[in-house]
Amino acid sequence: MENEKRHIAFYIGSLKKGGAERVFVNLADYFRGRGYRVTMVTQYRKENEYELPEGVDRVISDIAKEEEGGRIVNVFRRYRKLRRIFKELQADVVLSTIGKNNFMALLANAFLPTKVVVSVVAEPTEEYPNRSMRLLAKTLFYFADGIVMQTTDAVAFFGKRLQKKCVILKNSLNPVFVRPRFAGERRQDIVAVGRVDENKNHRMAIRAFAQIAERFPKSRLIIYGEGELRQKLLAEIEEMGLTGRILMPGAVTDVPDRIEKAYAFVLTSDTEGMPNTLIEAMALGLACVSTDCPCGGPKDLIADGQNGFLVPVKDDKMLAERLADLLENPQKVEKMGQAAAKLQEEYRPDKVNAEWEAYFTGIVGKKWGG
Image 1 (cartoon, rainbow, N blue to C red):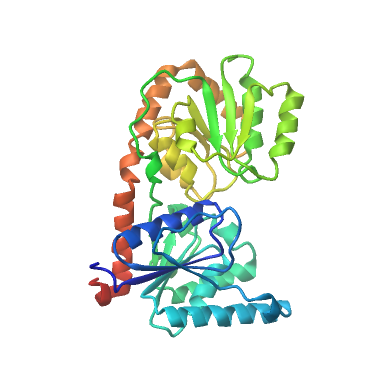
Image 2 (cartoon, one colour):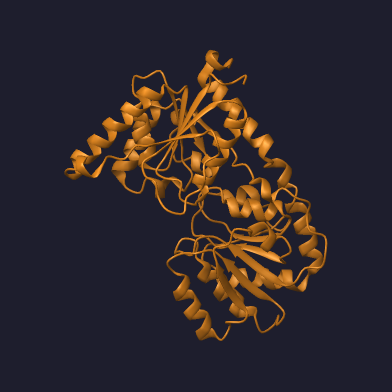
């Protein structure tokens, strides 16, 4: 294979099912398919993980039970083991993501020839929540060869000197969402997809729907996802007398098939980086209503009133008004959905993955022909 001497390594906590993990697995699949040697380094192996593509090697960097000591000792031993791994791998470039992983990737590759690219996938002030972590990020990131951010608002977290190192790269669409827009009659189902936790704030969607349920007796709210708040929210739905109207089927594997014929999609998160679920729903051609949450991902995707609606975080009244507007105006739903579907071309996997490849080629330089 033409690229077999090129070696890229990814570093992440685990491959548990989440947005950043899925992006890493998709990128690993792309680069392996292009003939690169690809290694996935994770600190842990957990249950319910994404499967790695054939040919992608995996290395676990966590220390064994018998190696554990005190907290500070464990940090040093994890660093030492990770550095040994990167020394042995001799990758041309390492891509790391999420919080402290970025620190460890930079420190473990210090003075090695490997290029290091760090990525921040969430609201930076949440990924680095206290003063000491923010100081570390704004200091250690000077030693990164590149910084990948999700949104223009997120880039503003850094000073002007570090901003020059930043690049915004898209997350490619999962290929199963690349399909023609459904053109048939749509049932009045409003759908949401995401982990059922405080930040995703599905309670906001439930309360908004409760305000309009009587006006639109044919409509349902369906929330796909699993999480610690699911049973609590189901109990609240029962108390509202809306058990047959608000459904929570749990996690499903056939999301595009479940939602492509829906009437509208809602995202109610308090914070997001660049929300994959919103990109996927828009690519399918759904009329979408999203919170205008930090760090600005939804507003980078939605032109309010044209290809979707933006509402303030936690404002269930405004969300109810926007959903009612859509339910009363099927022509608007059709127009918004058609406009949203144009996103599919922009986030097409072959296009986006090629942009990542070009970026890494530029980072590595002459060795890759950059």
